[in-house]
Length: 404
Ligand SMILES: Cc1ncc(COP(=O)(O)O)c(C=O)c1O
Figure 1: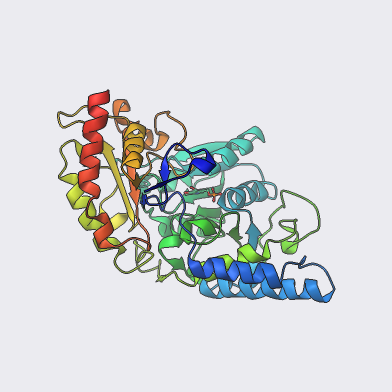
Figure 2: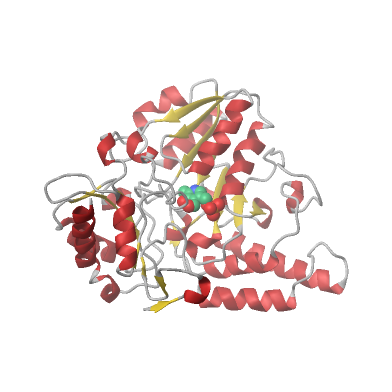
């Protein structure tokens, strides 16, 4: 294991086993090559009318076309953004600006980006209601009739939950919204990396995702939208992206995203609840690892079983063998010390130590809400890599238990 004193880091880096795909993923070599090549050849502003600009515009539109084709979307359905956080804000705030104020419904297990955008709408006079989930973190369909009744104008639901892996029964809800003329957005940031959807078939108006979750580059994402759907831009400027998102497009990042998306398997969401997974072996490997982890005294699973969860995702509650909760953050730190990179909570909020709101929404008793641990797998791993993980977790638990 090599340390990095030149970076001023006190932890070892470079040979950690990376089991945190839900936070971000290492870019594929082909993605880095594609980005370097585009950055060298097509570095110009794609709005410029000279030859350099035309070259950049062509590279941008080719990449957009490739992504759209993979998603069975039209190129104009794709709005380039800086990532899912921005896409989500554009979807919710941009929709609210063209709809009569009413009720926004979001699930009680959303990513903080959706909660933040929703709170802005509350400030603008919208009513906000949370769609409750069951003890597995799955949206309660028995609430459908009540929650899509007037004055609901806008519904936004996370498709694959980042912290506990729950796949939501999105399509019946989206269908019901469509029938009632309610606008429907989904945060598919964790779903798309496990299978690219057929946008043409989905009864969904708006869909957000980020490229870095499927081995593409950080700093680029998309909002998928429908032709003619009214939406107000959040920012003014050069009028790029059909006026929905001004700012010079990051051509190399979009090209990197196209390359990464090409490696994802298709997902027929109309006929399957669970996407296939970023690679063939991921689901059986995850199931085997989970079985071995659950044999550790004090470790239990949280969230849905294999039939309703993201195929690369394991979420656990960590306690002592005699049943006392341990800090998930302390276990994550201890695992990192032994060369395993995992996460204790949502991908983007692991830095905070508050109770998990997602575990709260699932009615997990409050003393366990800081005990979450997440492993999320990706194509860079092999069976053999995962072999030592249960033993390393068991050791980490002992260590944390002795320290606490
Ligand atoms: C479900 C979900 N939505 C939104 C985001 C935000 O993505 P980004 O940080 O790329 O904007 C994330 C990132 O962790 C996520 O997991």
